[in-house]
Image 1 (cartoon, helix red, strand yellow):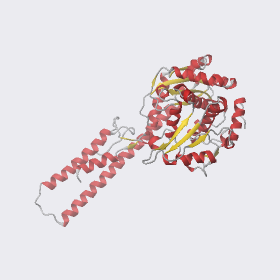
Image 2: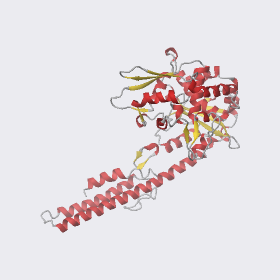
Image 3: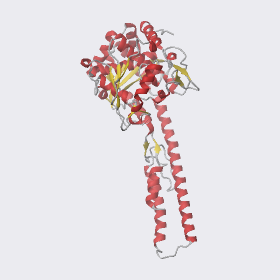
Image 4: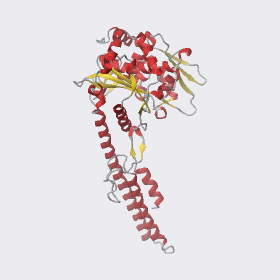
Length: 447
């Protein structure tokens, strides 16, 4: 077997599946690594590059020795016995390569599992998830005064999460852009006082970073009795100021579909009239969605997403969730429309070139959404929790604040297909009634 064949095989074989579905080459970093030339026991999925080199060196040495033995007798006659012995050596060496490469990847996979488990434990038990870390001084400040750079401990936790999920970004605290406070003020202008009071009691802060690995997210903070009572919102300041409202909404929606050669189909989303299509109004809608998550947790319109993420079953047979969702086998949750909308399970925001859906499917996906479901947006189709946050944000945006919402599907050679907001339409009547009652009395949501 030629050394280049061995080298090529090993370089492709001794890899581990990294976080976020990426393949990453391992590197060595523990005293257990490379204990012998033929064996490796690493401390994790990312600790064996040096060991891989040792594998390759060993097999190159073996192969080169075989080649030298062959070239020392160039004129020797080769009989059937010689051919059989050569083939036998080749097969034995190939079997050994496969066996040891399998051992290496098995060890690396085991190490990766251990690393992920350690990261999960560090994240689950992190101090920032408990009110003791935050204290209660924040409760005496206005909501706009709670916008500030993320504390170091929060940065540490995000870095752990990025390692766990395979994001390369390393966040840093950063001063919030002034547009965040302006956007929050525009929301509070028309938000009912009862809902503002809930935010005053439950929202610890809006924390800004750079290099988050996303636009933003909401997180639960436990009270002293370990109840899910408070929350924080974390935002990437640099991402927030990159796109105006309509451009951001279009970018997010198109991220759910993979481009396809020869297919010129795209979505143009409209959140604002041209003269209001600003960075502030882009941030405003992002904040509405994240505030929706905090309010959903605070008023129990849906079950706990933390319990579900921990692998336990949650009941979606009541509250807002039951209008679109039902329990499946085990801990699974399925929508009430999956028989007519099988594409729903493939919807994933921010997937881009890894999206399961292609741009060719945009027209049919939106047709089914509008004709056979009560989801307001595609993003709402992902889970009961995104369903609530999207419904809250769009209801406030369209019904209370009287702003536009529209999706225009543009395909070369075809008339534009326009999807309007479902508020005011029969298909979303039950959800609209629920939200009307909730905005009047959010503490005891309608059943």
